[in-house]
Amino acid sequence: MHRSLCCFGLLSLAANVSAEYSGNVAIETQHYSESAQFDDQFDDNVTLSFQPKWDGEWNDGDDLWSLEFFLRADNKDAGREHADVREALWLHVDGDSEWRVGINTMFWGVTESQHLVDVINQIDQVEGIDGEDKLGQPMIHLKRYQDWGVVDLLLLPAFRERTFQEKQGRLRTPLVVDTDQAQYESSDEDRHLDYSLRFSQTWGDLDLGLSWFKGTSRDPLLLAGFDGAGNPALIPFYEQMEQLGIDAQLIYLDWIWRLEFIRREAESNDYNAYTAGFEYTFYGIMESAVDLGMLLEYSSDDRPEGEAGAFDNDVFLGARFAFNDAQSSEILAGFVIDSDNRSRTFRVEGNRRFGESWKGTLELQTFSNIDPDDVLAVFENDDFVLLEMAYYF
Image 1 (cartoon, rainbow, N blue to C red):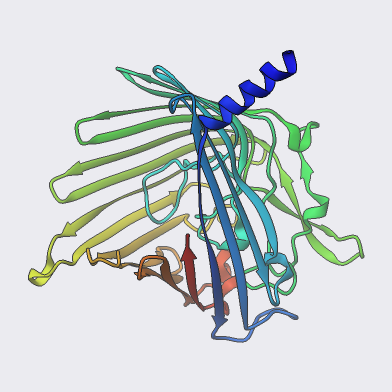
Image 2: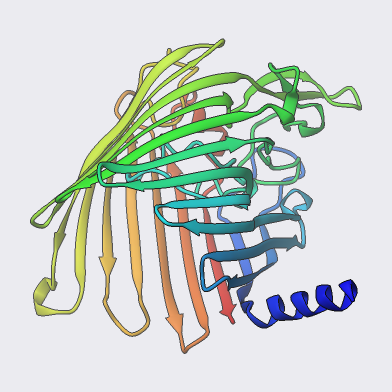
């Protein structure tokens, strides 16, 4: 009798659960215009990626689930061959509260050239150096909606180590990073319980976010050492840190003003960094359907020279073209110029739909006039063009 009731209950639940399947499969080719700086690096490669996703709901939409994987295979770079769970999430809605439990990928921030306050997910660096691709993060996430703002409380019970290019990969450090020997300041290593708190609110055209994070730094220090074969290598060291973050965006007429600021404290150093700027949009240029957004951002990092990142005293100047056509064509292009040594990088990202299910993507990245002491000097020969064609289902 009890078994019959149990089976009936499971059948009833299954009948009330809806699910959808989507995703994409893509082929990508990347070509480097100059010979590599380091031995065994390639000049071109071809990769295949597969990103399936399942979404569903039950309990009249108060409970939702999502499952998303990412897999990549590469014909030359074994370091890019990897698989990851981007999402394995249960979402429960209870009045003004939302509970998310599982693995999730989330984004904080507003600026275009870099994302300072975005501290929850680890970067999937073998996918690109722009920080846009992330590894899934295990979490317990409570979001509370109040009249005076939105509060996010996050408990992060497991840490994801950063991915790095292997010896044959391009866009890497002179010494290979040996991820098998990763070290931690915390004795709990990758099981340290991190936590974060965020407040956000919108007042008219102003969006404001205040965040605080305490736990394992997503940005490892790279220490000189040796790999298992006795060869010189870099060893990633993940220290404990606290970070206070502010992100703000103000829309005024055709202007969008943006700011990200962080105060980070760790054993290695305490520092402040910020990115601030604006985007001004010309709508319907030359009486066409095309909108042109002009972007200008300045980034500062007050760490000593040699310890700061790539955006220590840099200006980003860019343009965003939105063609507003049936194919959703877009192009974003921009320069980053170091105000101290005049090192320059240039990047173009463009995408366009073809038919109902296909999407083409173009990326171009160049490094020019790079100062030998700049952190980007290791990429000086790594100008590349990337083409991808993806089928969405």
